[in-house]
Length: 272
Image 1 (cartoon, helix red, strand yellow):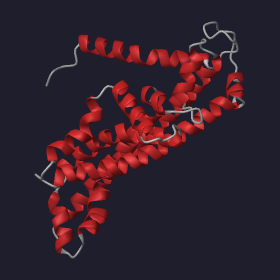
Image 2 (cartoon, rainbow, N blue to C red):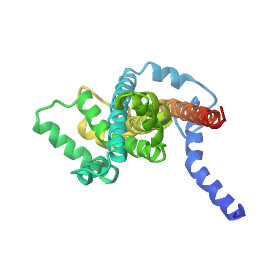
Image 3 (tube, rainbow, N blue to C red):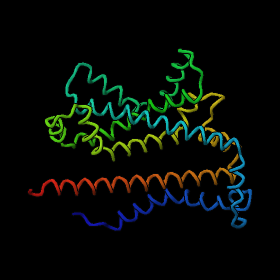
Image 4 (cartoon, rainbow, N blue to C red):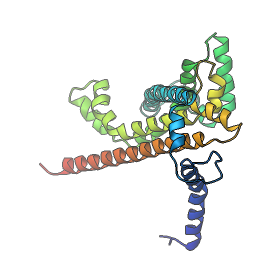
């Protein structure tokens, strides 16, 4: 086992500092009383009040959350189904094409994905709005769900499903009662990943959005081009808090599920 050297400690410290110090500065200056984001003029929460009264930001936030929840839910269902087919269906005609279509968005540049979806929506005469953003986000986020879920299915003990089938369960019941509860942490992680990707997306949304739907990243990007305002700092702080709570919650749920599964396995191994 290699020792944790001073070089590794220094590199790790610098890496975390590079990532998190700008976020800490942003959070601190969101409580700045001055309109100038680089000049500290005392502690104040006035910009959070201004943010709450800003209807444009609130409407964009509502659209973003609505799109993220719907697209991540659909992506989780489709991604889980795709992962199950890839892991359990074995070899079948068109497997290479099927897997390639699922994993293509992982390596496809976002500009190409957004442009192709834009041309598709124009070609079929679909007005751009919330629906088109949901379809676009579902398209690129379901592949991430498939990767997360398939990695869990690969290590899953298939004999548990076979035992359920021997006891009279149908394939769907075996999946619902046995497989799904065991892979639930991976499914939840995939949903959270898809939700985060949808919440953060700017490039694809900029191609597929319309006048009736503006997401929060697009609104922030448009506002930043005119200069960073304290309201944007306050909004970014709230988003950081939401993501932090989500990550902590997901970690606790995954840990509890792992502990519960380990306890059940120990009880099952005990002699009768």
